[in-house]
Length: 346
Image (cartoon, rainbow, N blue to C red):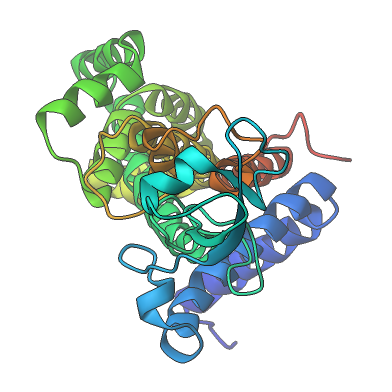
């Protein structure tokens, strides 16, 4: 009789479970749409450093210090007779730049912000920086923030949930009352107050979001799942076989809670991206560039309420926040249908 190593059996079972879950996932159109959006933004994040190194001039396309202000020729017309602002300028405004100009002369006006063109597919912002480069650069920040926040959330919430379910009593009471306290206090105002006191960088925000989420509502949900696992017969069998408390928690309970943990990891990414965009829009983040910073720049320069005329300043960044956050939510919903027996297709 040939005895197969235990690790090989576990790998084979894990691979079989992954294939079964993937076959169910690809049948869910919502999940595929979300996954496609994530892949597109992932490719954008990966291609930006390559474009900066081999294609784009860093002096023009750097998302933070790049500068390019196209010139546009305009004809000077009498005051209050401008019919087309893209080709004409009134005499008073022209003489603010050059007092010697007169009606009928032409002058070159620097466009800041500039509309989309062949050189700048999504135009430039009020500081002369390429919007497409900013958008692609910020994608990396969004992924980093979301993934770090999700990992911290899942790590803490899974451990807290499993420990509370296994020990019960005073341990469960302490962790669950802490979770209730975090749920009661509004999440965003806490971060606004803290960001006013501390200069947040992206990693700091990701860890803080993960800690608050991990000790908050996610821990309660995962604890309920851990409770259902802790009463399974194999847990009693492991206990009778001499398994200690840590062995039971980390070798038997937590691995069986992880599928639900991965589901809530997707929702954590959605929350982290949305929170960062909100804090950046309020000017409370100490980072060089993000989608929220792009909207904040447009707002601080007075273009927030003129979105129709300067749509490229707001629409790409706002749409990216919505699409990427929504895509992780869609993937999470698709995973929910795989993990949740009540939603699983028969």
